[in-house]
Image (cartoon, rainbow, N blue to C red; front, side, top):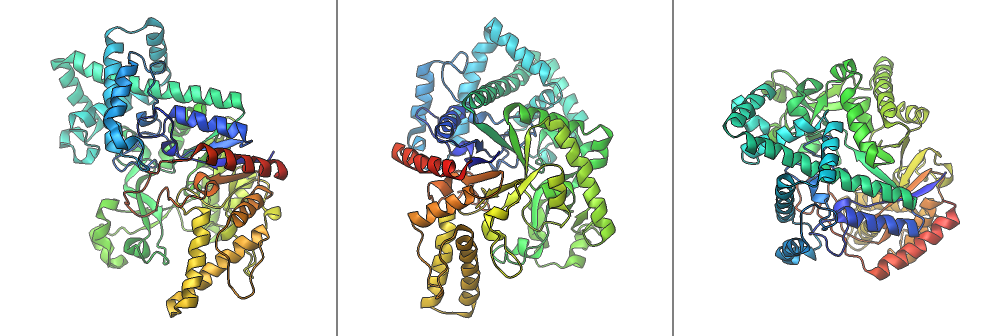
Length: 565
């Protein structure tokens, strides 16, 4: 059955009474909005606890949820009063109405409230709630104790996340456990209380998200999660399970010649800083790490996206951490190898350069993905299969009933004509953009302005840019049936173009059609700009009026009904 989705980061949602960032109650309001307007699912970004850069893709745990999304209301948080929550809100001041998130301030306030709640709960727990808390701990012994210990170690070392910069005796799991054991002898009550506090926060996180899942199920709206291809080097997983990772190789992508604005990406590619998986070690345990990760993910989400699914077949690796990228700018391969003891960026396990290598990579992907599907127990799986996709990947994904992306203005035939929606595979996920791209209106307007500028101030470079812009507009127009001007004089973006594009996506043959929230509401804000450390990344807060929500929802609902989704 065909369905429609809306991509909306949890952090971007807003409600009356929040604490400067989206929370589970704000997402609940969007579930209700989706149900009222026939939107079948909400696509979220990862909700794991973030690392230092606040990217949802740099979690300090593959399972632990980010307490920043906890909704603080007296009926949801034990032992907190309305006046205490209101006082916390007041202290945030203008940050509550800001269009960007002040993560340090928001985290400080929420952590403060959590500490108050835990201290009272720990001192005089409600018997029924305490039994539920203990049951949660018993169900999550595979990951929760290590996570809590990692958080304690961060606290001991001044909230410092980079474990490879801790004192040498703390940089290995055994040494860290010995340190905590010695501290427990000195002050057992304090150590045990801190470990319990971290578990308490996770209990509250899972309680709220599981309740949200139940509400979504009742409203007939699915929640779609996101499974990052890697975990942060500075994570509890890597610290305690180093045997599951290659900690001296980091995943990424090969050089991209078109990224001249980023010299490193242009010369070397993208180095994400996620350690490569030791697939052989993982296979020996029956992929136990993956199975636990997927089990906890699917408790909350009916469906999920696998980020960079190409990495399950083969992945490009760097023999240095991203913090050392600058050392390699301007070096050739030989120069780089002098700094890395003869190692250089390469494909693992093989490049797709021969039939034999392609067969090995496909077999590896099949083996690993079947383990993921088995652990998913029927949850719907979406593949982020963008970029340079080997020819064997999409047929294999279809064989596994995993839906891959279709981006209309990226798909064309050899003659440059667009691939129309009525020939999109049924087992596909149609979208105009992802969280890493501009919204639909910005894509059109940037192309329009590029062509106009070249017409008014022609240059050789401008000619090439205008040709590329015109090609993108021809694909969008051809896909949606918008007349293509013979004189290359394109119209500016308008409501008519906007709804024509959305209608065409919904009428495609794809099983899933999804719009970014910025697409639907014609927002020019960007969620993330890849390859940058921009202060705007991951900080967008929506500020939509009731009229916008109602009017856009009404039109979208009509188009969904017309398209038979």
